[in-house]
Length: 232
Image 1 (cartoon, one colour):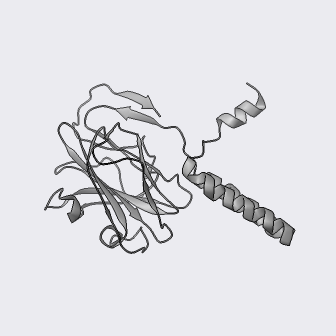
Image 2 (cartoon, one colour):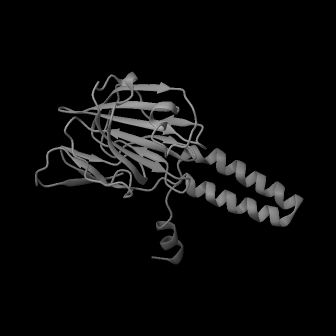
Image 3 (cartoon, helix red, strand yellow):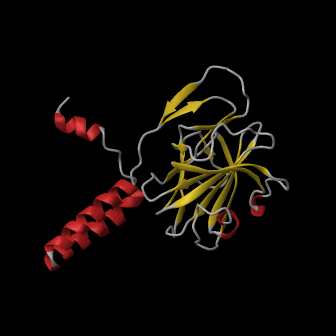
């Protein structure tokens, strides 16, 4: 393998959602070079960061009935029992909730935690407070899903943050998805909550780093049956 191919294999692809932003940063950099060279180099750094932010790496997703994988990259900020968003009608009692906070340095492509059908998808406008705060689950702009499998229903909520101003879904209500499929993106810092069925036991702890499509958040069967995997 040549050096160029070796380097290329280590670089994550860029999601198409990022091309307009990267192009804008690059154009601004050219203008800044014309104004003052040091500013132009700052623009180059900002352009490189923008390309890094919109990366969309390949993930290897473990597949087995009962596995719930992380929908987002980032830090597990909360593992609590909490009421799911009322607009979903998922439950009137608190459910196990796992919150993953994405900083501006994390990959922001979100993935389905299970294989199933998008039973419901509801967007709700709201505030833009720090997504790392617990009250962001109730107050912030969000896009909420119910993903139904043959046996369970999982709640997934994309929550805009202090900097985030745009939640972009890649799926529609009624669509069938596989675990690890890309379901959306939140631009520039945010959070994703996962609501497990009643009695579900999280296998992650607060402070742990999650990788979308790969980290197992819960095993709802809790048996030792063999696992397969998918790449995508």
